[in-house]
Image 1: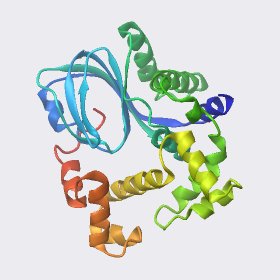
Image 2: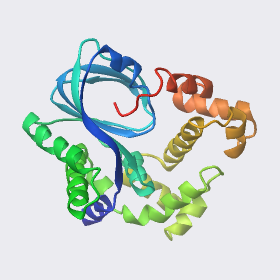
Image 3: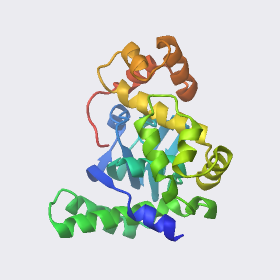
Image 4: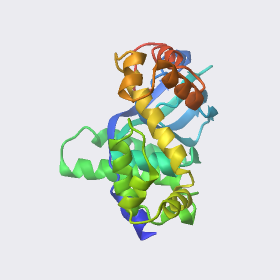
Length: 269
């Protein structure tokens, strides 16, 4: 438990934008941005999201965790009043999100939301020590609600994987061998693989595939061609990269790019 607490305290989440918005059908054309992790609290009304992992209804009185790159489309038939926070996590925190798979929604009392979210909105742009402490503490308090269902196995041995996570990040465009990762933790291959699965609830192979997919998505946000991305990520050819991406996301790189640009430029919703 102490390892997990220390790990959580070391996470860093930079807020890009935060606020409150009451919005209607125009939200359908604004929500298709894949750039940031989002936290929503629905204060009134409702909406619907189609995520890569499936559908998600946004309901009044619930707090939501929306991973980066996960939104395909959204719809709001009437109105939705919601607090929103957009976050760019550092590498360590990104691993935290990816490996531990926080729960997606949490019932929150409206009085708590009306205190916590305005506190972040008031402080996150200020450059004082007090405001930074208030923002960081409040954000972690909000995010802690998504961690209530983590198993005991997920709370152990987190720090020992830090070097392995950093290695994966550095070499994500290359073929990664388990022997290189196990050597960093001074264990054998089988033990490392089993411990990773036990700790994070996801296989090492699946975790690396998820990271590689996110890397591809981030490059698809740039002006690089699909062929250039395939080369940079060391795929044999463009077709191999396209097959990989489609297998992981159920869409081609071209489709992902076209959906990304639907609705144009209003971010932060």
